[in-house]
Length: 310
Image (cartoon, rainbow, N blue to C red):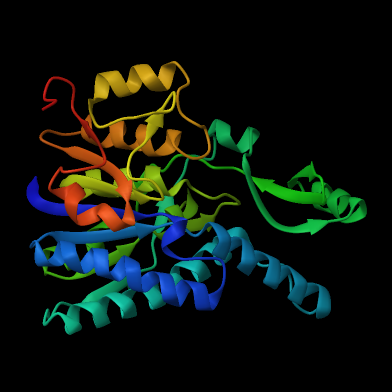
């Protein structure tokens, strides 16, 4: 394990809902990453793509309706597009911030495919709502194609699975770049979910929870720290902020249902998964603005392996 290697998971608050918002917000994320670079960390970054992949899927669907020569883009393709354009904005913002500080360090984005199990129970219980609102006839057409839909107040929307990540196919390339001193942006949006079919990788109609992929990436890189950046300085349970905690207590809180299934549970669960998969590891959950203090363990929710809580 490299004690100065860190994987940073950026939440959706680091980007925004529109192109201009994203370009503005990535500058804040770049500042936090540059702070870590000044602390001499080897850095790999993953990120959310919640609003972006939905926007791309909606745009591609509307395009296919306007021009029937084109088909609706599959979710795997939308995920790849989101990795590319978020990576483009993020790597340029980080490069600019580094150069402004006199730091000469390359930044790369790796389009990343993540293996999922075709028999993952998540495919029978989809949870991720995505895309535009549809009327009843359009929803029925989606169901005839084998897709799942859910009814909301403003109409029907497609709902897709969120399986767990099993493997990261580009991990050797990511590791090589990190070891060469580059800052690497990888597995954006949880990675492009794919299934093996012989020698071919087939995209899955799914979205992987990015926090779980961040934990998998940190484990496969043998990082010392997983830093999950979100909108709050600390995770709360029963309205009380959680500071330093060991994995055993975190698991007890998970089992008692103290964390929201959509927002906080994946972060805590991913943190536990990471610290219990190796030795001398910490997972830290905090806000983007407190990233520098968090890696010095001055703030945030810090999860350690059972028995080594400070």
